[in-house]
Length: 412
RNA sequence: GCGCAGGUGGCAGAGCGGUCAAUUGCAUUAGACUGUAAAUCUAACGCCCAUGUGGCUACGGGGGUUCGAAUCCCUCCCUGCGCACCA
Image 1 (cartoon, rainbow, N blue to C red):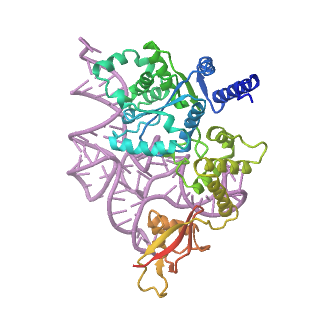
Image 2 (cartoon, chains in turn orange, cyan):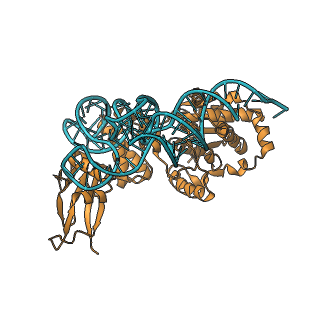
Image 3 (tube, rainbow, N blue to C red):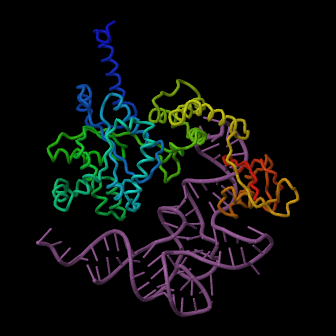
């Protein structure tokens, strides 16, 4: 009984730790600045303060957001301190990294609400209880004119407009507002205030992260190290995963949706998804279909449960490979059937009304769907928009490939 | 403040008095093919009545000219550029 203290055990532990650090610094990492310094810091055994910032603009997290969260979790597992910055102040500015979308200032209530949802979801990845959660309004609202001026004296305009998207907008004659120009400085100031040893973020954040280093240096602090992580493409395989492109997999998606969306990614993305979104490795020389099934199952398991993942997999195969009707179907509640319906048990309804009830946005759209043979009721394709249906309840309405409804009659 | 150039459908971007519900590309939707892959092909893509050389609403907001305006005029708002200003 060595209690893990003998030479052999200690050595093995050390080796394992080095392996973990190696993994930390390589898996799914785009760039580290500076690698040397960070590596030494990690090996020194010092507990690092690892900063990760989020804007509380939207309450929902998608898989793209989990990339840095997973990295953060790795740090937590090695005993480092995760410092989660909630950008309630900066959210009002809006990080201009994407488009020049204007943002309404969020109320305190909205921020609180968004964050509750956010943290609940983030909690599936990192240990929120052990993390330090800070709102940046705590210090940014205290920057009065004088303090702000002092801070801004440390950074030049030229440095700021080096940022690519700023440059681009200037060249293309698009509007660039002062507060957007200041965004990186505010984010950098966060690092100063919480004394970050390391900040992680997507590769689109590189400029902001580096501004953190600059600012810290000018304030005679040790500059934070930074790790940038690749941006992950969305389910379309082309553009980065984002709500505005509607190519995202939400953490809150149902197991079936999640599974289906993951199966729809292009093959070329399978390995990247494994590396960035899971802790597993892609199977060796498996065919893409099998690899994708495993990927989908692994991810659903992470955010739901092994059982639900298993079910989702079966359901997927059932519906799409075997073209059968899914087990779980949304009920489509129909009330007020035409009174002249002949059947006492059911009633009569036009197909158009039925489609509208099923969230088809307009009658024109409904006609189009019918004309293109996309509408099936109990496996029978309906074309004529004037079709009157005798409904008894329990019929299966299928629109396109993905929309299934089970009709349920509601009596008044 | 002055001058110039702009503001068109989810985005990009044509159109510059009638044939414009508005070319085209991207995105989207549906169908074919598949591993619900990807790629490809086909079609649709403002709304309403659906019989039509149909009706309604739309080209930053408001007003006007005209038989007729996304297109011309006035005005307001917004964006970019130049000039002026620059403690």
